[in-house]
Length: 235
Image (cartoon, rainbow, N blue to C red; front, side, top):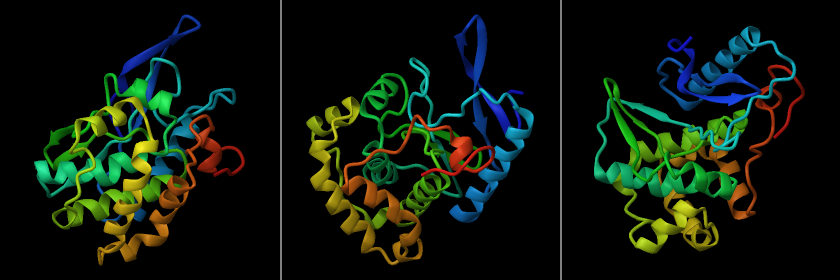
């Protein structure tokens, strides 16, 4: 179905003479990141009951199939997008998640999707569309959502702009991570100085750990395993 809490995008990819749509999860609004992750897992379990093909892998990330980009859109309610808010989201969320991507897949995705400041107005507020799909695992999903939550609640206290220089923008679009590693340390210092951050530090910590260790999230893993909805657990 196109609509509904478990639906599909209008785009399809053709493989073996058959059309395969891009699946979408559309959980109902939540008041905390933890609650939202629980709803996402419930939807994944429902989808698993509907899609029973054992040979079908479920992928997240940036571009699980060549030419088929995916995203991890974050919806915000009760707040309107502004230049300052979007700049904070790009610097403290979009950049952080870019540092976990497969750089080739990420740069190919950004040819059409995931631009800096990419958002869409919604009746409830707006959706931020820059990141790739963070449904890699429950830990990554909870960390990404918690980070976005903290940044949106505290954007007026986050003044750093990682993309002030045109060269930094170019590095983001081509997935060049090296130039951002130094500023990433400064960004974490900014975040950790926020009173709100300490309430979510344990959930967000995995992002800092992976970024500073120059590791990537696992885009080729079948997320049925990481979410434990049909297979064994993974990271």
